Structure formats: C-alpha cells, structure tokens
Length: 482
Image (tube, rainbow, N blue to C red):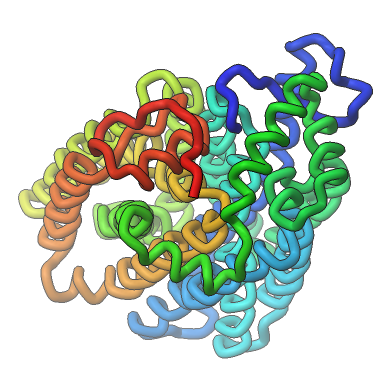
C-alpha cells in the first residue's frame, strides 16, 4: 500500500483497535482466499500431465493431437488474459473473480464428461479462459490490499497456491491412476477449488483502490476499515488514493494508450519481458510433460512416471514456501538473477544427461529437475506475477497486468505446443540446451532492465517510471502531480 508503516488485517471497522497479530492474520486470510484463483490455475496446469497418458490410450492421439489437448487451454487463457483487464476495470476485482470461478467450474465438469476429443478440446478452452483471466486478476487484487512491506509475501501467496494446486493435481492423478479410474475424474475434480473460491469471496472486501477510482469513497473507506487499519491509517490511505485518482480516470483502452507513452512504456516492456521469459526458460515443459520426460529417461510405467512427477510437485511447493519468506528480505532483482543462473546450469545438466545416457538416468533427471524447479520457484515462479501487479500505476494496473499476463500465456502456449516437436527435431538434449540459452537471455534482461521494488509503495514505483531514474533503485517520495 502507499505507506510502508500501514498494517491491515480484515473483517470490519470494529477491528480497528484489534491487536497487531490479529490484523496480520486476517490480511493473510484475505490473501489466501483470493489466491484460490491461483490454485485453479495450478491444478489445471498440473493435472493434464498425468491425465494425458490415459487420454492418449482412450482416444489414440497422434503426437500433434497430444500437444493440442495439452496446450489448447492456453489459447483460452490468452483470450481470458485479454478480457481480464476490461472486466477488472468495469466490474471490480471481486465480481470478476466470481464470474471466472463459475466459468472454470463449468469447464471442469464438462471436461470430465467429454465424449470425444473435440468436446474435450472445447472444455479445455473454457477452463483455460477461467484460469487465464484469474491469474492476472488475483495478484492485482492482493497488491491493492497489501501493505508495502508485506506485498511481496502476500502476492507470492498466489504462486504458492499455484504450486499447491500443481502438487495436489499430481496426487489426484496418482490416486485415480492407482484406482484404475482413468482421466475423467482427474479433470472433473478441478471444480472443487472453484467452488471454494466462490464461497470465499463472500468474506473479503472489494479493492479500496478500485472503489476510489469509481468515486465510491464511502465504500473505499469501509473497505479499508474492513482491512483493519486505524482511523489514521485509513485517512492517510484515502488521501493517497485520492491524490493518485486525480489522474486515473479512463477506460481500459485509454489505459493502454497511456502505457505506450514514454516512461510507462518501459514498465510495459518490463512486464511483458518478465511474462515471456518466465515461460521461455521451459518451466511448463516440466509441468505439462514431466511424466513423458521421465518415461523417456527409463521409467516405463505411467504410475512410476506420475510418482516421480509428484516428487517434483512437492519440491515445488516447499521451495515456494521458502520464497514467501525471502522475497521481501532479499528482493526481487537478486532472486531473478540468481534463479536464472541456476536454472541455466540445471538445463545444461539435463541436456548432458540425455546426451550421454546412464544406467541411473531416471535418478539423475529427477535430481536435475529438483535443482531446476527450486531455482524457478524462488525466483521467476512468483516474481513475475508479483511484479506484473506492482510495477504499474493504479490507473493502468489492470491493463498492464492483463497485457503482461497475455504475453505470459502466449509464450506458455508456444513452449507447450512445440515441446514434442522440438524433441523430434533437436532431441531431448538440444531442446533443454535451447531453454538454457533462453535462461541466459532472461538473466541479461533482468540485469539491464528490471528495477528492485522491494519495500517500495505502489506510489514510489509510479514515481520511478514517471521520472525515469536509474534501473536498479527506486527512491521513496510523493506521487508526482500532473
């Protein structure tokens, strides 16, 4: 939030005098409920990796059809990311999340009863639209209700929810694989987190910043009070929101034009670049195709491959938990740089393992993937979603986050839809080395363009882009008047 000293909890103006620990617990609860949108994303991202092994058996898919079933939801996500910005601006964060939760639930149930591959593809597009839009809206909402010194940790809740969703999906895949029930219940179970999100939305307030932009100042004050601030905190926060809101009227498309102007144009480049590189380092080849990779490494049975994939999912969750504790201490920029370097080393090692071969190839691949997933989880995994929500001024935040999310989903689609094709052309080794080269490019991008936003208020960050100072440190100061 605007003040580095503000601490907000939740649940009502009566809690303004509540102990600090209670307010902290309540703001965590609000972030956790909103992050269920990330759980939807994570579950559907991970569940297809095990389900596709059985879908192939039922529908006898060729490799290009397999790529389509795995990646088609990303086309829906691309559309969802584009639609998310206008919806978010027009309807508000809560209402938009409710609509998307319902859409996701319908798509998940449809997936579970799809009679043929074409109905399955349609259902996957519907599901993709839901989690694609939610993935950009959840970080925006959390960033707008979180105090500056906790914003990194709280927005990272979304990434933690994504990794938990992935891990749960692997466990569900393994459970139904052991039970011999096939892929249908694997996909249909995704309706459960969407129902949890719909119920949880009854207990969280609308974003006070969005309410302020709509001139609903009484509602904005009530929302800030529900976030547990003292009267002094609420008055200060409202004053800063009013100051920023003087220049924040306009439609989504006007916001897009604003983003293309000098100053904010660099913010857009950073947001889009982070979104693209998060995928071009190859993360979703691991998430979507991990069982296939393990089968290529010698784990012949589907159950054994899914078991190994489940271990990767658990490591992903544990590393993301670590990230929530260090992201506001170490900072975004150092984690991105070190994460990129370690991922490059792990990808080079993966390529070498497949090139040289070994009687212990399966174990070596598992260890290399552990290193890779840990490096990704503490860096690019959560930091892209965090920075795409915090680097844009409030007046263009929904538009900027939506465009960055669109770039992320488009890159995700390119990577997931070409993995098997690349393996056919370059082999496993060449494919992983190509992703390693992308990792080097991501490191250079962060070194030269990405600023440190740790501990800075959203207004400090806005001032940075408008004044065009250095690309490493963002100074504190008042929002500039225009």
